[in-house]
Amino acid sequence: MKLHIHLFAGLVDLFGTSVLHIDIQQETISIEQLKEQIAAAYPAASEPLQSCFFAKNQAYAGSQEIITEADELALIPPVSGGQPANYEITYDTIDAASVAAKVNHPNHGASLAFIGTTREMTYGQRTVLLEYEAYTPMALKTMETIGQEIDTKWPGTLCAITHRLGKVAIAEASVVIAVSSPHRADCYEASRYAIERLKQIVPIWKKEIWEDGSEWKGSQTGPWNPLEIPATE
Image (tube, rainbow, N blue to C red; front, side):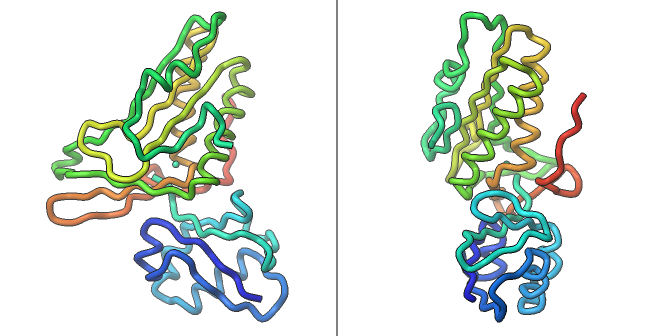
């Protein structure tokens, strides 16, 4: 069977293509076996593959899941993370007030808007520009998942997320997360949860562009595992 694997961010540079075509002798193969075959065929990719996860039909897949030629596959490097009304991906400038308006509710006494912007200086290095790309259908689904998780942990809390793709200049917003709830404590907790979870599971990647180079940024908070379930406090 022939498998077609979508690649993103630094993996495109590593493999030299945005879609990797792999011929497999058997009719089915596990994710773990497929990773081993790719590593054998592309030794330079062996180490980066260890921190990547596969997506099968736009959902993260465990190492023992079986795939066939009919499955849509993507190899997901660590994320930096219908179009439902509350979850949006755009190349346009984000209007924070519009995102916040999506979670207005007459019975909610607290609302917050988190705005993530491009920072110029990081540990003494000057950033000129950020550039984002995404596996858009899956990114929207995982954003919606975050909203569902928030509703489970803090019943009645509303969430809206808009993330920008493409080039984002200094001081411009790359992501706006709005939450509202009846009480402020839940609102604060849900807002923090949303951004941390976004960085964990949403397949969006960030390239930092400096005056003298650039680099795709993956997980910066320890080992990356999108299948890990956050602890419930």
